Image 1 (tube, rainbow, N blue to C red):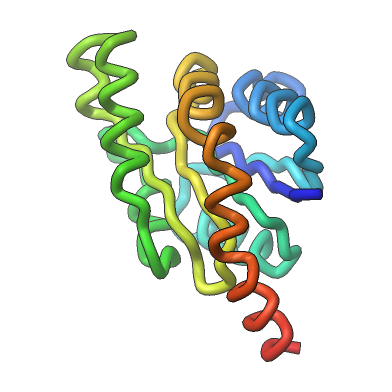
Image 2 (spheres, rainbow, N blue to C red):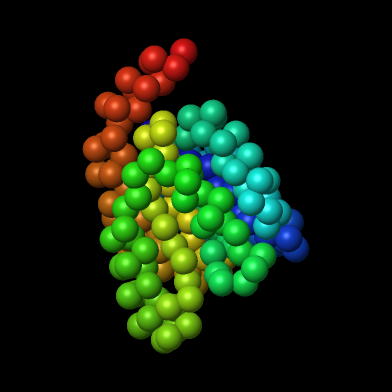
Length: 165
């Protein structure tokens, strides 16, 4: 059974009105992924990193962060998370923008979306905050490859966690 945590980056949303986080949670549960934590973190690079690192310690297979991926000055999710990924999956962002371009046109070009693995081989996705963007990413890119990507790194994860304890 795979496990996941969801971090929603927002200065204004609370869990009760976190539509994108709720959508991510529902889609994961429908695909037999247990969501072990779902929290809101403000648009602040240090706080995003602190929340992300605390999630690492919880040992989830999958970490999904949504929000704060645009080009506004307050959008700091990508610079916060990028240095914490030891290996990126560039094809994810490329494919996401290509799909988004079909849906929203040139606005998709300003969208940052990244995926990769951190030091603990946890699969991480940073998605835009819009529900449509999250649904596109989950249904067309994340869920179809989830088992395969995690399986590819699972043996290395066990080794790392074994050495860490």
